[in-house]
Length: 248
Ligand code: NAP
Image 1 (cartoon, rainbow, N blue to C red):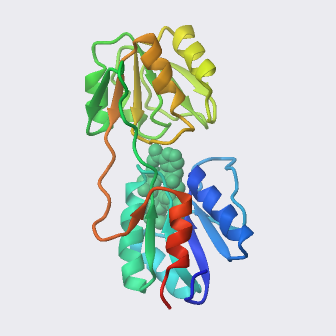
Image 2: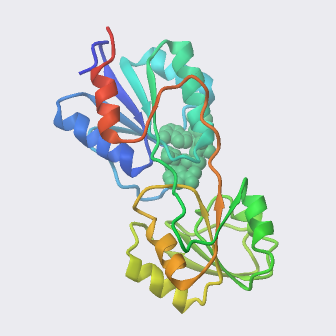
């Protein structure tokens, strides 16, 4: 598939990264998936897995120099901006081809009441007038909401750490979430506003449909920009095609 010698390094932590690793392994390509180690019990991808940070762009460049890597696919989450920036710098330094695999963001449908903001801090300001807030932004970054007086329902895979809003109900769950589940959750907690990052994808999309049906507004945090000059694709199939097309 790739004509430079070596394996494919997939920077992971997403469903796309797992599907890419699975497809590469199925095609007989050697693959190493890298996970940050944030989730206590991660769903492990096929092939070799390494866990933990590299030590910034410099650390990743050194890792690439020390390992036979033919190409890197940065399939991290759209909001993993530090890793994405490090990958761009390190791949250039090490002279290894890099592809960004990032699913498209969500698009509003008729009936949606979406309010776009640029940061978690702006999201906290946008929900200041509501009494019952559903926070689906993940357990990191909750400090931005710590000053809220509203009752906050926080959903995350692992328990969140303080600082948290004073009145917080934690719902420990890992997606995907069904529309029935999301509808039930919004109703059970009498949610008045949902806060989410524009993660995109189907795994966590049902909350947006449930919010639309129930007339609940949604505050969406815009994605950080992509590093310039890095080829970007939206699907696993496109990533596989890019890997097949790499020159020697
Ligand atoms: P981040 O802020 O961009 O990364 C912070 C640091 O974590 C990086 O500098 C790097 O440490 C390490 N890191 C991140 N992703 C890594 C990977 N795949 N392999 C090895 N080290 C990694 O990232 P984040 O937002 O904390 O996300 C961490 C992981 O969770 C990512 O793999 C991401 O795909 C996944 N995830 C993130 C979100 C989200 O909303 N941010 C949601 C779902 C899943 P060094 O500098 O030491 O290399």
